[in-house]
Length: 231
Image (cartoon, rainbow, N blue to C red; front, side, top):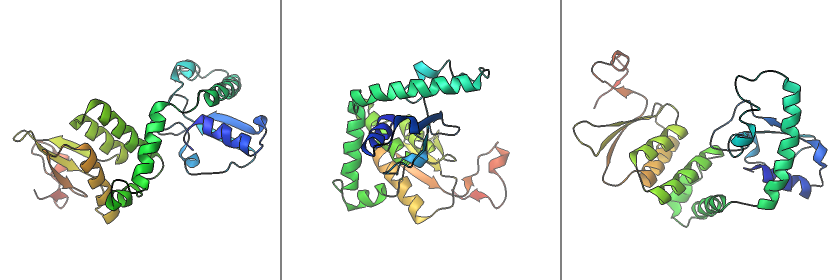
């Protein structure tokens, strides 16, 4: 489940009373998804049900003042208002149905999962889970609308691999240096190559560095003995 309306539809299908569903602003969440990650792969709700969600994903205009970082007074009142508003928004959400963009993402994800793009792409796509798939699919739709770009590639890579850094080259505009920042494993390599294949134009020449950063003159933290990748 990815969205508020999916939670409410599932609750109705299970015959769950509306008052048994409690909503709370997620304490920790990804900016790329609406529900807390624990709800992404579930198929049935437990009673009583506490749902944490990111209200800024689609409803920022409604909640930006209510949950402004500077507002700390009356937490119980604000929590109650959040509960009432989310239930009402959820009912409207059910009536509105799935947006066109979510439909496209659902169909694109199904195409990868069914092997329509080949067995290799199916295997690699299966390695991504939960919010990672949302990041991928949203990035792919952005690319189809706006075209490929280094900035989009960098955004997707760093969202999927937080320590990753993407550098351009001063000598060659098509040379891209990618510091992954993790120990190289077969699974990680397949995921990185999947992103490169879909988001990086074929004219670019990527060079990958996994656990060790390459040395950069003038940046002392990259010039530590025993921790430098040899270019």
